[in-house]
Length: 115
Length: 109
Image 1 (spheres, rainbow over the protein chains, first blue to last red):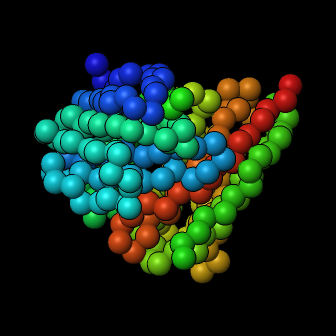
Image 2 (cartoon, one colour):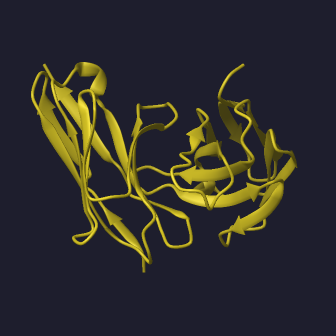
Image 3 (cartoon, rainbow over the protein chains, first blue to last red):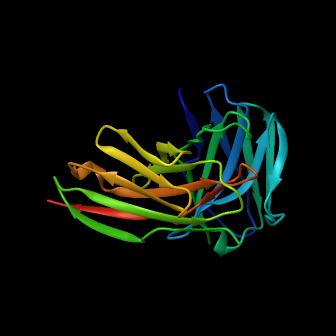
């Protein structure tokens, strides 16, 4: 595997379910990101992990819970979601923030639908 | 607040040239990125500008004017595969990426 992978690619869940999204990067990066992408809206940064430490948490509801067990893996645990949480969830990685021209490499995303 | 503006949608003809504009207002500036995103796929990096001027990379060029808070992405010799959304993102003074909503480019034969 190369680049950034995400599983599952599609997920349909009820509001009472608990599920997890998985991201894995094979680029040797040390920063990982979760974004939410809704139609015709800018990418919304949810969480940032740098050197396995959470450095950003943009007022995301507690029904979203990230986990970064090591620099290659990132999870987003979901529980009691709302229909408005339906969106494309993108994972990205880069070298640690603070360095210029460290572009982010994105995974293909998980298309989440909350019923 | 911080803001990135770009047109929602543009249409162009195969073989032609198109310019996608991006204006920004951010707290500090540490570079501007352009990404391409095909429907249902991951955004992929196209270009990075931190100094004023034009950066050329094959059929794609990106221009930056920091004093005007303005950038554009220029696509030449358009091909059908260029149909995608183009995302403008600015790295602010805290090295956080601020994203525009993207410009959907439709290429017609």
